Length: 428
Image (cartoon, rainbow, N blue to C red; front, top):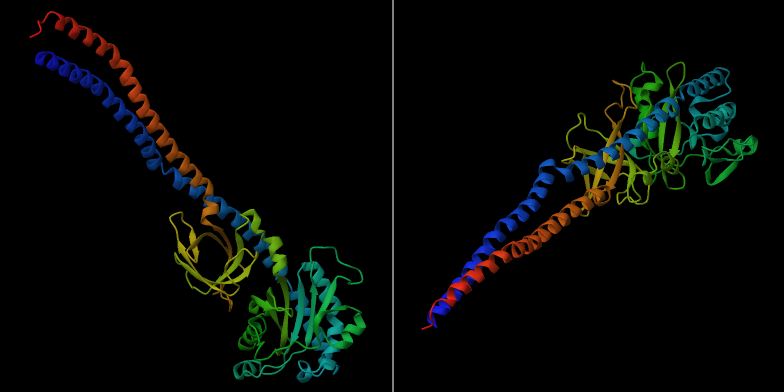
């Protein structure tokens, strides 16, 4: 009996040995197949390349919008110098003919009304031709720097005309225009509708101080008397009477004798920018904006101020300081409450070199949540991981089945030999 038990143990050992010798290489092969798939994907950097392609597409879209916006800014909206010449020549003539008191121009609505009525048709024609949201004249004949420094802000005369839908066809009776600011006599003469926030003068106070669009071009023209008015032009943000903000370009008004007496400017409302920079082409959760940086040289990381946002989806507020850090995709990233945005920047060349404001670097900014921009890459990554697991599991199952199938005939023959041998051995 002992001898028979030993024979049985030997059968089991040999049978198990054959099964394992066949099974182990097949399992190792299945593991290697799954590992090689992951290794090839890793070496070829498939997820990285997919992310890079997604970012490059976003960058190309932002570049396209930047080119269009820059052409509008430089070739259209900034070209108001001929209009400034008309206003300057008219003011020169009226002062020379004593129809205008220079010193009272910025404080008396009665004094500025004749000048405004002389040039208002030119202003409206320019408003329609340039397809801007608004156009304005703001007069000043006193020491603006002293007023701003002391905080003694004063109301200023002028005219401010608004077109809330600049892309629509112009109206012959100016029915689509609203007066935001003008002397009362101008309203009566032109029969233009007034907005609900209409005022006879432009309101400035400690709560509503002078802004850059007014002070900077004016003071630059005063400081550099030999500089052309166009070189003193400034892009900035203007607070509108309804409490919102608008992109604006303003240049100084200069008489032939060199005296500066105000600024002329155009504005583009944020609602208009939303049409020119539609965020939905990037993603419903994305946003476009205008970023302004004062960095003299562009570094890998960029700090700037957000001057415009074209959608309510943005978690960032107007004027907010942003810090953009470089990413592994040769792009930039922005963080808000641990949420990451992939940012594409395209610089706007809107100032000539060696002009007073050429140190301001303007950018079109397109930002997309990382999860949205790289959603396809993430799906591919998950599919590759799942595929590797499926290959591994099916490989193991195939190895077990193949081992069983190959070893079974051998085990059967081995069993028959062992059974035949045991029959001739006498039992003890």
